[in-house]
Amino acid sequence: MKGSTVKVENVSKHFGHFNALKNVSFDILRGEFFSLLGPSGCGKTTLLRIIAGFEDPSSGAVYLDGTNVVPIPANIRHVNTVFQNYALFPHLSVFENVAFPLRLKKVSEIEIKRRVTEFLELVKLPAEVSKYPAQLSGGQKQRVSIARALINEPRVLLLDEPLSALDAKLRQHMLIELDAIHDKIGITFIYVTHDQQEALSVSDRVAVMNEGQIHQIGTPVQIYESPADSFVARFIGETNYLNGTVSSLQNEQHATVDIEGLCPVTVYLDKPVQPGDHVKVTIRPEKIHIGLERPAHVPPEMNVLEGVVDEIIYTGFQSKFFLKTSHNFMFRVFKQHVRFFNDE
View 1 (cartoon, rainbow, N blue to C red):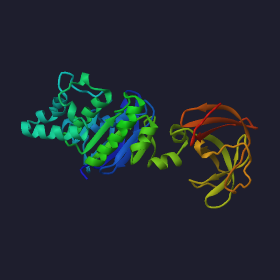
View 2: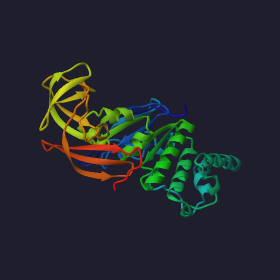
View 3: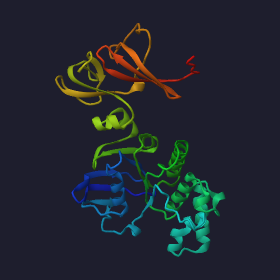
View 4: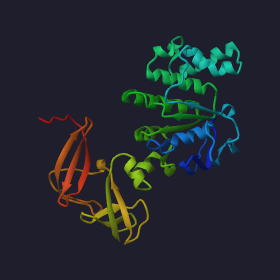
């Protein structure tokens, strides 16, 4: 692979009395698509800027392939950044925008033409070579920005909310293209976003951040199915969130939990617990089945609750049901539409 390993070690960043990053540490594998995910103001962009060399950490180190790059200026690190606002030169054509880094290096005209052509084909813009940024769509501008960043042949590409200015459909399309580009060139991608779906869709691993700290690092499946704490559970997708106390262990995989304001429920154990432990239980809405009739056969690991539908929200591919139990607990249930839906 052409990418670099990245190691962030005990990095903190202070802006006056504000602690933007608090002793952050993690490792990124060579060629990995790694995302920093979190709400606005959590420190993810500050961390990206420190890796890029645009900010110095208050303490800690950043290693690329084992070398601490904190003392190394941004312009000679093997790192390039794609920004949210494209940062294209409006007076230069697409060709000249992409060629700009090579002209700074005094590369020959023949080599410039060859490489610009190669990278415009990579981002599927060979026909737009003579256009100017004002003549391009938002998605096309971002492709030019990506081509310009990649033509320098960095070992790490940093992407700071690169799709946030695009509409939803174009954003999904660009995500697929970005993932394909990563697979083709094989360098390390570090992707900053506040959008959970973006991070889960393209990442090999995700670091979930909040208030300058990392709460969990894992694969998209691990982050979604087994959140490390209440912040991750609430931030990633939608969930039903319950507080309770473990009353007994049924076996190695299941326990009975007494839920506050609800009956005892059987839960799957993704973390070790003991009777008497106070726990937080999350149940994803799509994992609950809703029906008018009580099931004739209920496996011991399943739970059956009765409730009244309080509200239904139709969202196209699914409906969201809000059900109130006899104890006034509100459950969210998602039901996928697998055939024609008619509300008449």
